[in-house]
Image 1 (cartoon, rainbow, N blue to C red):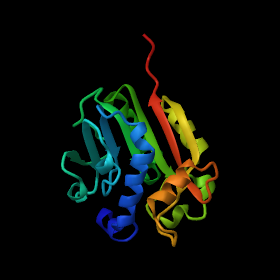
Image 2 (image 1 turned 90 degrees about the vertical axis):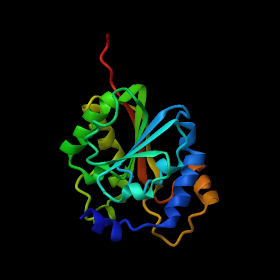
Image 3 (image 1 turned 180 degrees about the horizontal axis):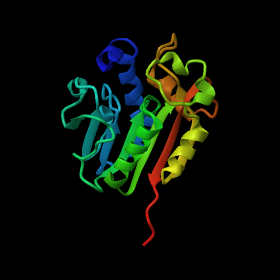
Image 4 (image 1 turned 60 degrees about the horizontal axis):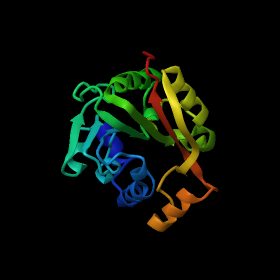
Length: 215
């Protein structure tokens, strides 16, 4: 199913390279420590992690072919995103998941959060980018692999229920897809990121960190 998914629903598209390069330069680079360790959960074609500048970059995905798309220097782990046993405890400064958790059940999502908790540093965070059902309900199940539904409210609540503290919620961070007639140009992406008005903003961004037991 995974290979078939990448042939149909998520076929390779050079426009994503332009999108992620611009997102890194204009948004994420200011939030990721250059001397830190970054983990890309459900990396896919690696467009996020390939653009990251950091001391250590790790990508994990169940798709066996994904490592072929990674830049030199990115560590590839082929496997379930809930199995982070190959990563040292307390080593990840910034974990990122784009369009991942809507493909998992809530039990699977909770398992990822539980596994990630011990891998993050004391100040480590998790940033999630995915469709916001409140704004993308018409298209949400056009993707046949979507199994869970989240809005920016329910996603934040789920994280809190699993002992994560919410740092940031952006209900309308990006449009849902690059599969449209609109051009994917860096200048337009930058204008969109900095605009207070988000037309067609159907993807949300939520950042959180684990609650730590008080000493």
